[in-house]
Length: 609
Image (cartoon, rainbow, N blue to C red; front, top):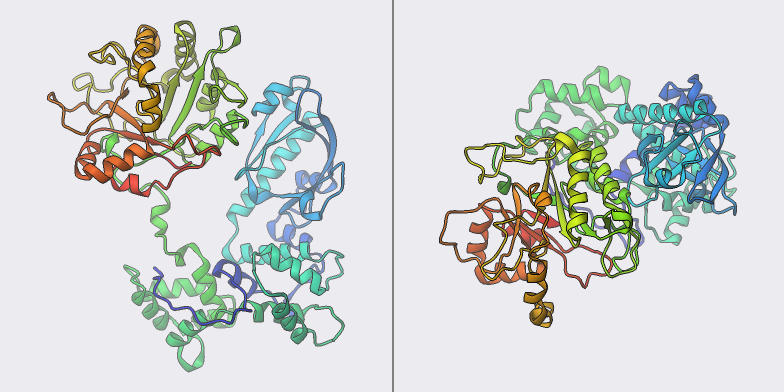
């Protein structure tokens, strides 16, 4: 693996800040002499390389389709959508024309394409359109879903199939193809007038696209040095020369020279020496020869089992050259230990897409959390109209979504990325009747996914392992009758409020909790098996045996206090029981704290999504 001990060369303040992931691909720009006749139309060249130029679905997408964009019950607007010739982006029409970059989205940014009414938007607003005509394009990151209705079911299927083929081909590309495709797509986009020449304005646009932060004067000086025709335009070899000068990596070239010697090429034995110095376990001469055959770009060098600088850079950019062990991209740890032995990716106020004061609640927020690997999500449950519980941030202006819809989203999306168990953390503010409704929805919708009894009847108090709980859903909440304290108070799902709030509410706390103590539905309580909510007021060991099925929730402030004042006891507690830490209520934007210090204390459920 590559170590972090490489020393970067000194650069002037004018030189660009650029990462290897940006610099190296552009260093492999093919020379004009090696380009085929489609170089002037890089999009067609890209689709040709993808083997999709004759595909009927892709051809239909290239011609474009008029699709209805659906945003509300009354907002249905017809827009033209058309696949660009680069095979990487889709152009779409806007009512008000904007910058070109705001009229496209990229295939590589698509998280999923769903058929039918499989999004919150289409379930609410797409009833007038047959499911066969509808599709949803869900994006990675925070971009909103695109809900569409096609004129016919076949037209919708063409887009579903076509996008699936493009995404599959992108995933299957070799390193060389990815870089080649990447280079030409950015050049194509930056060339605003499509004349195969680059003005300085277009060069600046290109730099912004690839995230190169550079002084304009320094960039223009490089531009003029490469403008041999002196016509304020770069073309062909001039573009290549500019990019090579712009994105040289002296520190990597120095490493290459150190191992290659005067001939400036790496033999298999020299490459093996480099691998051994980097601590690559099991590196052999055969391994070095294989790397040359895989990543070297020059066919003559490859035939002689030699690696040039470009091939070396290709290797460094590949998954094999990354610091991350490729074997660790999949689960490689022992997943047979009790749940308390693992850090669990968790989310706080999962339902919110924005501010916790007036933001939007959405089932899509749960789907997005699951696609990011989240295994514990929060459901703030409140009384809703028509006997149906709702989820929202209580006593605020946030919008409301049905509890039932969230559970359906859990059923459909909880295990698309990971098979390991999901914990539903219920903050329950409902009365008995709607708690019974919640229990019924959990049982009916989740079915066999839901854990309703201990897996090991002989040891019901022992936490099972993630391996035993694959594709199962656990409910975290209050439990009867054991959830009563000696003074009759129930155990809240958010047991410890911030210390300032505790003092202000102390007078009302006992009376309010006693009033609610009899309002815990046995039907809902029965679904709490391994994650029983409890207070964590002290770290003093209890007189009885350990209770691993009890899980304490506390604020980040209280967790820091435990860490500071009783760190060893806190760690010992977390070796046997689960602990959930949630952000302070003062974080109005629902921002998360840095979970590292909580992890250091062994807290398993830290909100960082």
